[in-house]
Amino acid sequence: MAKEKEELVAFATCNNYYGYWFLRNCVVHKDYRGKGIQKKLTKSRLDFLKDLNAKEVQVCVDPKNVYSLENILKSGFEIKGKKFIEGKEHLKLKKKL
Ligand SMILES: CC(C)(COP(=O)(O)OP(=O)(O)OC[C@H]1O[C@@H](n2cnc3c(N)ncnc32)[C@H](O)[C@@H]1OP(=O)(O)O)[C@@H](O)C(=O)NCCC(=O)NCCS
Image 1 (cartoon, rainbow, N blue to C red):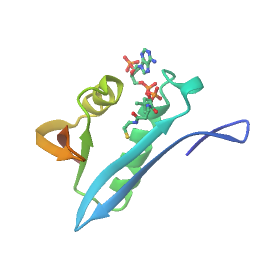
Image 2 (image 1 turned 90 degrees about the vertical axis):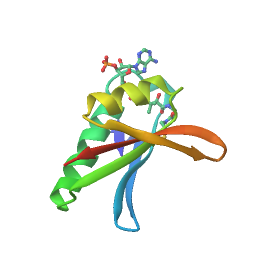
Image 3 (image 1 turned 180 degrees about the vertical axis):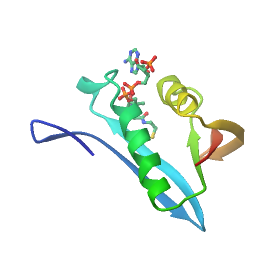
């Protein structure tokens, strides 16, 4: 979670699904976008997973979501394939921790 003056302005999650770690939803309030919050939340989730001794993490990104995709690529993820989620094509990315 990211807070500004005690107001929630962003959140992001991660989970373990059948033994695989995933970065999940990241949403930043529209008034706070473009300030590096997603980048920080990505780093803090990766640090959290490293502390849990995770060896690899995956994420699925809509290729039209250029800001998310840029952030994920800059965080060291590599595109490993495609996946359909609710009928929409997403990129599947992975990163070794
Ligand atoms: C996608 C989303 C999470 C990005 O969050 P954010 O905190 O604005 O992202 P960041 O500020 O960390 O930006 C990442 C990069 O994109 C750029 N960027 C982000 N928003 C931008 C904007 N509106 N205009 C221009 N550049 C922007 C940043 O400058 C940064 O680039 P840089 O590394 O070259 O500096 C946010 O737009 C959002 O909540 N969107 C709706 C929900 C969503 O699509 N979530 C992702 C899928 S779950």
